[in-house]
Length: 174
Image (tube, rainbow, N blue to C red; front, side, top):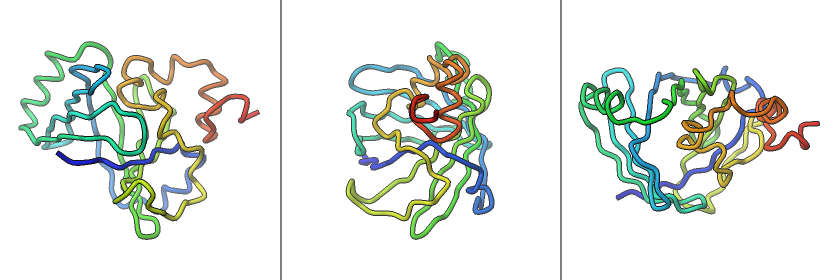
């Protein structure tokens, strides 16, 4: 088991793009979501894996992750996923001593861009780039399992506009 310590943010502009050092196309789907955990299958070119994540709120959650053959992951996605897939391009973006993962969503979540940073402890400090928007670590609307069932493009226009501006709520975005 690994304890994943992660913070998630909306992205307010494209300033991160000039720092991006890599990109990877990801597809994922959820086999189960309960109040205890979510079970996800993910593929990337040449790779596949299964992840089981605890559903506890907050910055730290238990996570089990196992590599599986890409063909098995693809078969699981096509056979067992009930609902939408999450398709996104993940960019690695170094900043200060850390690296952000910036996810540019596609398909039914196109237009949404989120940044995540993994930390060594829940109170670890990090440099915050000016392209980061509001923190959404505890906002379940921005969890991938939720985006699979309630995609970004089904949200109201004011909520989508606010998120594209890096704001959690339409009222804050004006």
